[in-house]
Image 1: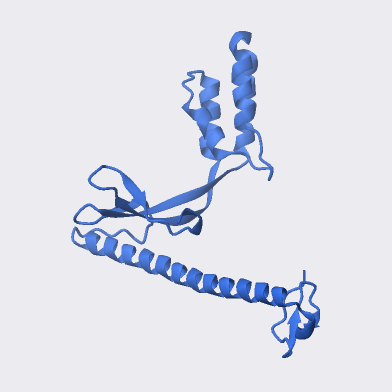
Image 2: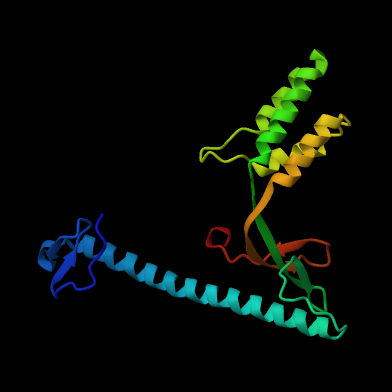
Length: 207
C-alpha cells in the first residue's frame, strides 16, 4: 500500500493503491465510509495528543511535588525515577508512578547454563530428570529468539545448596543487563469504604 498523497486535486479521491479516482466514480457508500473513518481517526489523534500531554504534565507535576517534599527534609533525589504512590487526603484516590526495567542477559548466561548442566549430570538420576525439564523450560526462547527473564530468574528461587549450582546462580545475576526502562502512570479510586481500588481506565478497550 502506498503512502497517501497530501496533494490530491479537487474532485478526486486517492484509493488504496495510490491512484487518483474521480469523485463521480466513487460510490456513495464508499464516500460515507471514507468520511466516517477519517472523522473518527482525526478525533482519535486529537485525543491521543491530549492524553500524551496529560501524561507528560502529570509526570512533571509528580516530579515537582517529590522535589518539594524532599526539600522539607533537605534531601536531593538527583532526578532519580522510582516507584511512587500518592494518595488523596480523604483516601479516595491514589496515583501510582511505576518504572519497569527491560532486562537482558549477556554471555555469562551461557556460563550459568553450562554450570547447571554439570550439576544435573553429577546429581543422582532420580532427581535429574525433573531438574533438567525445569532448566530446559527456563532457557527456552520465544518466537523472537529471546529468553524469558522471568523464567531464568525463577531458577534463583530454588533452594539448592550445591556449590556449583550457587556459582551458576551468581553467573545469572552477573549476566543481567538493564537495557532501558519505561514509566507507567496509573490512577485509582476507592470502591466505597472497602480496601479495594478501581482503576481509572484511560485505555479505550477498558472503558
